[in-house]
Image (tube, one colour):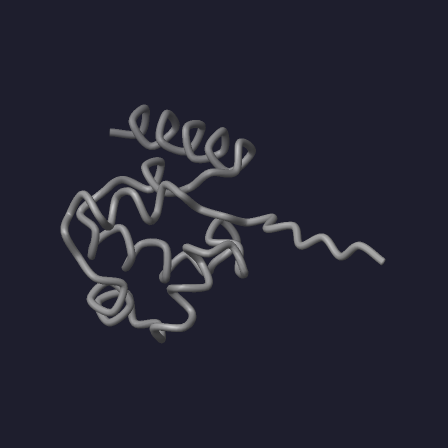
Length: 92
């Protein structure tokens, strides 16, 4: 019997940005207000960061000093974010 493990939500971008900022997972987790294990789950793909609560995504981006599009990977989410930003720009 063969067992395959598929990591559906792996977020290499999240890890890449964190390493570029020279931050530990613990530091980002603390600043984002999530447990270390929750943050690790986002990086490892056990939990979908694209589906995280908006406040968690925003606090994580603030901790990493990055834009949401730098760490979100879902094409539909990125499309919606782009549409939202264009609408917000038109409102100014």
